[in-house]
Amino acid sequence: MAPNQSKSASGGNTPKPANNPAGGSGQSAKDKSRAQSRPISGKAAGAKAGKAAGSGGGKGGNTPRPGSRPAAQPKKSRFSGAVLAWGAVGLVIVVIAALVIVKLASGSSANAKDYTPVTTAPASVVHDVTTIPASVYNTVGITSPTIHVNPPIVLTNQPPLTLNGKTPSMLYVGAEYCPFCAAERWAMTAALSRFGTWSNLKITASSHTDFAANTHTFSYHGVAYTSQYINFVHKEVDSNVPDSAANPPYTPLETLTKEENQIATKYSSSQYVPGSQGGISFPFVSINNQVLISGASYDPTVLAGQSWSQIASGLNDPTNPVTQAIVSAANYISAGICASTKNAPAPVCTSPGVQAATKALKLS
Image (cartoon, rainbow, N blue to C red; front, side, top):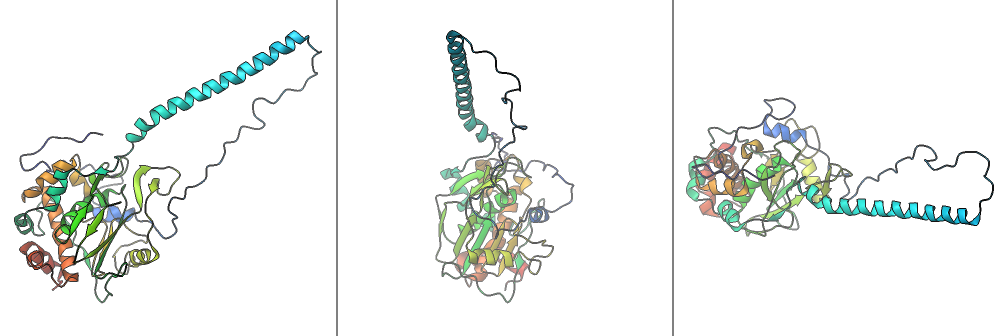
């Protein structure tokens, strides 16, 4: 599905009117994403349910009817019957082969319509999202006049998060099909670029059939991130490729380690997330067990109809509503990281935009 390529004067990512989600209005993005929560621990990556063989309706259609065997036929007749029988078999084989060829020839084009493949992010998109001007971060702060941005949850008296022997750590758990993850990745990608370097960033889109269908975003599957300040661990547990034999119906990608699953399960419970009904809400983000994101920071429908380049090119305009949503969420994430790194690096952590988030979250 080709994205709308038209650009607005303010940078090209002014949101289009949001579609009403199925199931009613008035539900926040965070509640919608929590409604999609599900347990992860019982899932085996790559496992698919077996398909039952279809019954043939009794004995099938070629059981001979009762009756006396006809008298022996002359050799010529028997020979002709054999030829006809083998000819029929050959015809069936030809028909089956033709159907297989047609299926193979049309399969790739049909599948391509069901999801947006993961590809390497264009250099211009990577540049725009990772080099948002400091003036934009500071002008926006945590304020978006037209789009509500959910602040993260602040945790207290929790042990620092250590993953792969490194502290402080930040854990992200999501899925490529998830529209709420699609929105959050824009803010995470921007925020983390202030503390380290991305390598091999990928682009894709959320499910074509889910809420906020085909939201353009990044994928962290196979992506590298390095930082001297924060250890970022990311898991995309499912792709956006439909697979009716899987649960949820998308091809599995990555499996959480026991430690990662324990962290995500613990901090997704109602003890830490008000209103949680169990399971892990996508996206799940723990910043050193001090700041927690469970569900979307803003409604993904604000990105509707926007291509990657349209969203990214508008990130230098602090008056753009989509930019305000992404940058506000990124300042909150940055404040959480700064609380974990003892305010390093100073140019980021002492900036007015991050300080506004820090004050709002009462992290200092």
